[in-house]
Image (cartoon, rainbow, N blue to C red; front, side, top):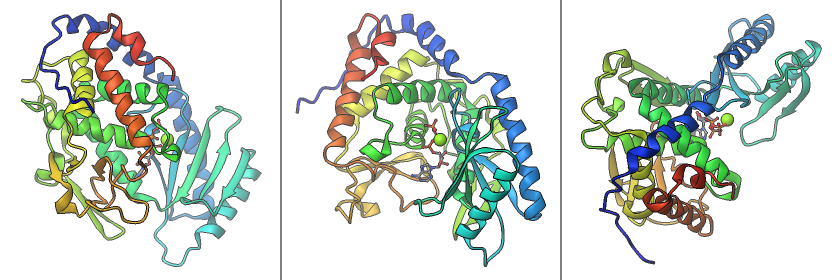
Length: 335
Ligand code: ATP
Ligand code: MG
């Protein structure tokens, strides 16, 4: 495989800032949509409180991490501190309650990997999945949202990367490519490693937030309102960052030996994580450490076929950023 490292600088790169910004702006959900989500959430909270007064509902995933696209489904977690609940019974009960309140397409999927109830709200047109006690997802959602508040370039870059991944069909975990969650972590990590850095490493700072979830201590500095100038000495713009991101994953990342880690804001060795061998279905062909569940490699869905697809797509994107006359159009061309 030809290994190229683009040191050369494209001196017209800033011409593409405006078109990339336009793409970013077109992907931000409208305020009315967020209002509808809140409306549905309030209705669900009401229904749940009648049956389980001590339960709490949390939004998680893209509707709450500030990396959501327009018209996405919403993900809700019902958290209940009760040792002897039976999740299946509870989901079935919940499905009954929702159905009697005129919510539509209600379905309890009690045997799924993450058991959920699905529903569609005919008033707002929003579809929603509700799971029980998936609190780690609520906490990692908050971490992503907090990072997004520090520097707007994270949101810009992540929207463009997600849009690219969806257009090029490399955002499908069931086909061995990466989740949106993994792509956002890759963007955070990339911005932590810019020089000067655009994002700090919140988990290495003095914690102001700390919770224990499923025996995992999740703590980090979450007073991000005090960090809003953090990245200001780095003047890189969106087109440069998109270019740098794809260039990194196409030509600079050491797939054989390293792990990207948002938790430490650094690149770790596969050896120190003992991710050098295939164990079961975990091949560790591209390694992205979950910030809290550190034994969890978000690249574990990737197999020997999909790694090639992924790397070819990174290279295609890097080539386009390097030399195409209209990179903004070409990058998102449907696969
Ligand atoms: P999309 O716009 O594609 O729906 P999303 O932000 O909802 O994006 P998903 O990858 O669908 O992203 O994940 C939803 C949420 O579930 C994430 O924000 C994260 O909290 C959690 N999550 C997803 N995958 C994992 C995983 N492998 N390990 C831990 N948490 C995960
Ligand atoms: Mg989602």
